[in-house]
Length: 282
Image (tube, rainbow, N blue to C red; front, side, top):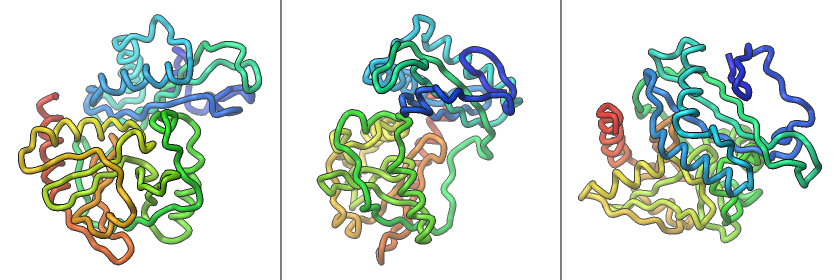
């Protein structure tokens, strides 16, 4: 079942009109959310990112779009799909209503919520190869629009095709200043000694929910120093560890970039703290 603008619809009956602005112009944004046994992880951060993103895109936020309303809608679709006692991946899409060409007739919105199952209740690190490369064909804009989860993900799509065709597990994206911004599907963290770096939002990286969580965690771990600073491609091969973060996969260590192979010591330490916080309901 899918929640289409407040109405429950069977999966095979959920359709998008050709005039839908998300389809026709990419005039939409989305949140990818993890629900563990009926509890939405990091809901407050998701909600405020959604509201901020809608304001950036000049969408009209409905009065009913309170945290309580959207939480109820999400948990209802989880229940309808029989996932209340397991782990679910939620996709909440918001698009401007149909009408107009580049300039919309209205800033009112529609929303759609879908749910699918995930295998594990907590984050784990798989002991398998994970090799990345740089994607240099196109660059991420170092601006505010790059920090939100809009439907304009053509660079990520092309990067995914490039990785698949060349036998890599992921690609790292660059901005126009040739600084490393993020991976195709998550934020990037670099570990060198006891220093952990992640690109700043001003470089154009996504305002990732798990990125926000890890920055909060790292501030409280005395063994690490945290920096939000630009990362050059040259630094990648000098790092001890590299890892990617997103709310669905958690922490994904990069095992190899070019000829450099990386450890996973810090990744596993941070993952343990993250899972402990989830168990405690933080």
